[in-house]
Structure formats: structure tokens, C-alpha cells
Length: 361
Image (cartoon, rainbow, N blue to C red):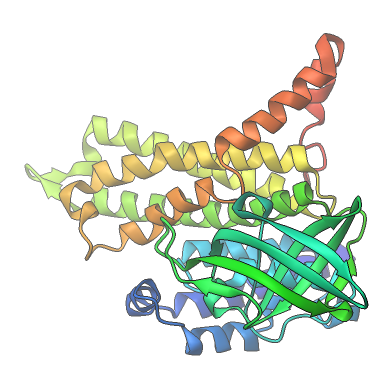
């Protein structure tokens, strides 16, 4: 009965997300890509409670399974929703587990690959200094969350808007990705010891898991758009989708979209336990799928798919951008490879079958 109720809750949540994100249109996406803040869109996302989806019920969140929460990001990716949902969800999860209140507005997290911050005790306060490049949505964030180390201990730092100096920029996804500089004295209440499971590496893996979910959604939309176009575009008296060469390309595209969906399932199942190796494998596979599928989609669409006016680029640009964020394929492949080498010859096969073993049936 509990599983049935959980399934019903998940279905209702997904239906609500599809309805909400599906109402966003191209002008909303283009406005954000011009640097505007989507105030109306964000207020709808906030009112739906989605930014708190990864926060426990005791802390004011939904109290749903993390796997269901990550499904929201898959739907957001499918619709190219131009809001910092993944960033705020992760920030709130980290804040709540460290004993902070969740952010009331948009928030973002600085992952280790983008920059390094030093934390120094200064009497009853703290000094924090450092720089980070390409922090998603930093200019719009009311709360900026850092994770850094001090004397072999990991800390979570909460920075309010205005503490950091932000230089606006845009990512390959054509979404805000800003340079951040911090040189400030902050109060002791804004620095908390991180729970033991949160390290610089697990933070990066957690963010990667969220990106994999978004990528799976975007790839599903790319496949849908491409198959639809192939069935509608008529050349030499018949839809181009009837041509064997195009059918073969569409089959490859469908396979990659399915692989990304499977990777998202692995990442979702590994999120709570912060299983770095499972998430690493998922991120690598999702990145590979994006690298193969996006060019096929543009080839099938032909010249129209490369134009600014066509919506395909909303999704393929995000795929290319997300592929390299929170650790590239090369980075996570190295993580998996080093673990495989450490397992040794006798332990290699047990290692292979153990990666992602926490995936739900």
C-alpha cells in the first residue's frame, strides 16, 4: 500500500511539473538567454514548492523520495525550463543537512571544479577568500553555498547576496554562468560543519547526478522533435523518415536517448547514498549520449536545425553545456578508471558489477 501511495504521489508530482514547465514558451527561454531574470516563471516554480523537493518534511520540504525529486529535473530538462531549479534544490539540500534554514529565493552552489575558497578563523567570525568561474545563476542567487575545508574538516558556508562580487557571464548552454570573487569577513552563524558524507568530491557528484537527470529529459525531447520532423518533412514525394539512411540515424538517436534515461535512473538511485562511482558512470554515459545524439538531430533537421529561430538549439546547447559541467566525461572516466585499477585483477569483475548496484529494480 505504501508503494502504491508513493507511485500515486510521484505521478501527481510529475503531472504538476509537466503542466507547469510545459506552460513556459520560447519567449521565456529567449528572455533568459538575453540576461533577464524570469521573475514570473520562478514565482510559479517557488509556489509549487519544487525548490524544496530535496528537503525533508521535517525541514519544511515535500518529504518525497530523492528519486522522485530528481524526476522533476528530468521534466524541467525536457521543457528547457529557464530557471535555476537544480541549483536551488541542491543548495537547499545542503543547507538543511548542515542545519541552516532553506533559501527563500533562488540559490546556487559552487562546485570544486569552478574555483577554490580558503576559510580562516578570525576570532568569533570567519574570513573567506577565493574565486570561482562559471557559477550557474550566481548573479540572481539570494544565497550562494560553498563547501570548503579548514584544518582537515569540511564546512558549509552560506553567503547572502552582496557578499560576493559577481561578474556576469553565459555558459555554452546560454544560461547565466558567472564569475564569483569573495573576500569577506562573515559571521560564525553562516559557517557550519558539513555532515560527514558531504565532501568536495561528493558535492560534485551530487550536482552531476542532477545534471544527468536534466540531460535525460533534454535528450528525450530532442529525439521526439527529430522523429516528428523526419515524419513531417517531405522530400521527393515522401517523408524523409521513410529513407533507410534516416531511419538508421533515428534508431541510433533513440538508443542514445534510452541510454541517457538509464543513466538518469542510476544517478537518481545513487543520489541519497552519494555513490560517487555510480554517479560517475552515469555522467560519463549521459555525456557520451549527448555527444552522439545532438549531431544526429541537427543532421536530420538539416539547415533549419542550425538557425537561431528553430527551437532545437535550446536543447542541444544545454546538452553540450551540461555534458562538461560538474565534471566532464574525461574527469569522471578517470575516477572510474582509477577505482578499477585499485580493485586489481582479482577484484575487477566484482568492482564492475557493483557499480550502480543500488539502482532500483
